[in-house]
Image (tube, rainbow, N blue to C red; front, top):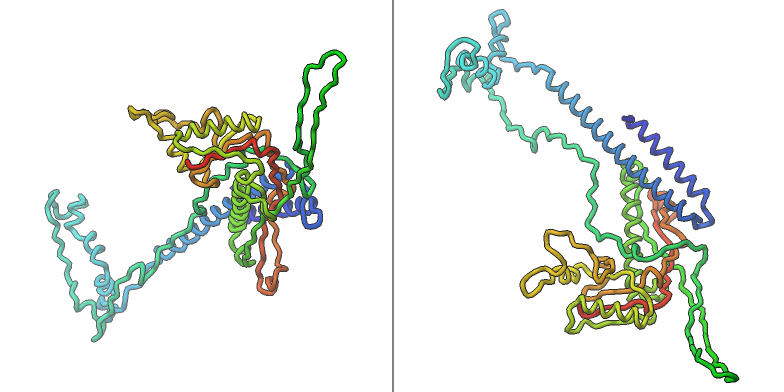
Length: 427
């Protein structure tokens, strides 16, 4: 297993390689990377996170070993008995040593205890009380001169506190899983906006024509539509000492800043209102259809929404999104006989409805569901994957040995056909 120094050098080398990788792909204030290159960055960051954890574990083990060696050395150092007076030739020092033996030490050296153990001397039967006479032990022997020694109870709070090493695990706060983007196709773009042509008028007049008759005329109108690339970002101030003294903390910070950006991205994909600098999410898409639950069972309302997507939106739904509390009500539906419709409770039960895969997430408002052709009528375009940069040029951070970390990404959500999506309300 590599030593702490070797592991630290490896981490430093790989951080340098990652920094060079970023420099090689820097274009002004942005980074130009392909999907594969962005994946390389994430893989290298994950590797650095694991190496930092290994370094922390090795450091903790070395600290434990050093502390144990110190404690063992103290334990093997003989204690010098206190002075009891008397002439050494008359046995005063030997008597002092005998007096200051602990009660436990005198007990195990007694003939009665040795006999019970089978070491010879008096014999004691099992279950019999062992009585040991300790001569010359009296409270007056605890006095030196005319003054009594102070006997203070030694405890872990008032004495020597136990050594408690901290394990390398960092328990993060509970957060929801990021799942919505899994339904949506994704691609890269170099543009600041995604432009596409939408057919806004389609007049189909094809018809049978008699010989010599006038052929009917069709009409089609196309309109340019735009979805702007938006920025999602967050920052975090931190001291140089925190980063230098605890190498593991950088990996934790990078992880949480990345998650923070992704969490906001998911909210924007679902509920963004489209007003700059927000994305326009599915619940605010132009042409979005709505199906009220009313008196229908919830699965029936979802199927009616599927029908609207197929009949009015002329698209094939590819999935649905539901709030966990709403999915709970669906998953626990029973027949009049109490039989679970979605399967026996002992079975895991797929998160599917009417053949469509489901995303169960608090990202969507409770009592509202969404069905749509995510795979064919929407797309995420990423101009810049999540990048994390650090600088001490903010405010007076340089003189205070502080740095500002910034995590950001740039992306656009394009909903090509709003009628290919339908909300279910009143669940």
